[in-house]
Length: 419
Ligand code: SR1
Ligand code: MG
Image (cartoon, rainbow, N blue to C red):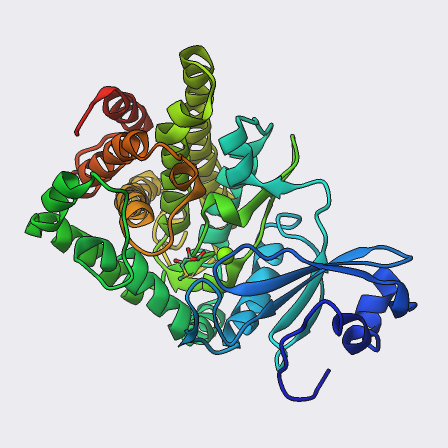
């Protein structure tokens, strides 16, 4: 496997991986019996399930181009290096949240990891109306642990600086986010597409210079405020669940960026699921029941995040930021400082949430929550609610006080018709 990069395919994979003991230890060495399926449905990579006499494994390999667009959009294989490094850090900062990693090969852009056989992608589960026990607990705590333990609230300063320097080299994937998330939704970019009928809403968004300024204020934060390591792409397609267990996958977009980035993207994906529910449930009772569950998930996730972040603040704050030497050691409370940090995270979260709600309907990479709605008149009507709430979040992130206001706002936009 140390030869030049070559993309794997189903027929050649067994022989090519048969000499890697980290892999044969898991699936067995009788490679002629391996059953291999390519199951990747993401935007960037190949993903294989390999089943052998002894067990099953996932092989993820980066392609030298963007799978979604094709060979016309070349990409380096480096993202796999960043994904591997992010996985290691996620496991250290929140043990058990990622699939087990067995092997990494930089030249081949290849990671071998645990096959989460009983887990499914959260987005599909939400489209099907399946609830997940413990979802908010796992993800709220995870976002807090990743944010806190990757920052100089916790890390040794030189280690954190070295780590952020490493991840700042993930320029290609940062570039994708900078373009497709923060910029393309707000003008007629070449690769954009949208549901027919949304033109009046798009006009409102693209003519609003204050809105575009807010979006790029957040881009400045994203590209220049390396506060902590973020997963970088924490949407419902990067989360896998059983009915009561949650794992996070695909951190190839990992960056050192603002606290609140991951949580904002996650909440946006819950809100998009919320607004799309009328198209996926059989009747209004089912719709409102599942929508109520989603809003509860949002509320609980933010609550778990806050509680965990506060706990870490009080028990693990050993870095240079807001150090105990300035507060507790002087016999003073650090509550004002904590509230101020939390308030910044909240404003970032709301703004990123609004931007993610925009890009998933207007830019290149859309969500199945809306995309699977065949009736385009209905899709446009539901997307319009989502887009307009995204606008409200972005314009008024400073004045939305608390999660209850966010929940009430979602209910209000869910009742409105904009088209
Ligand atoms: C062109 S890549 C588009 C999107 O797919 C990934 O999952 C990220 O969300 C990225 O923005
Ligand atoms: Mg991904």
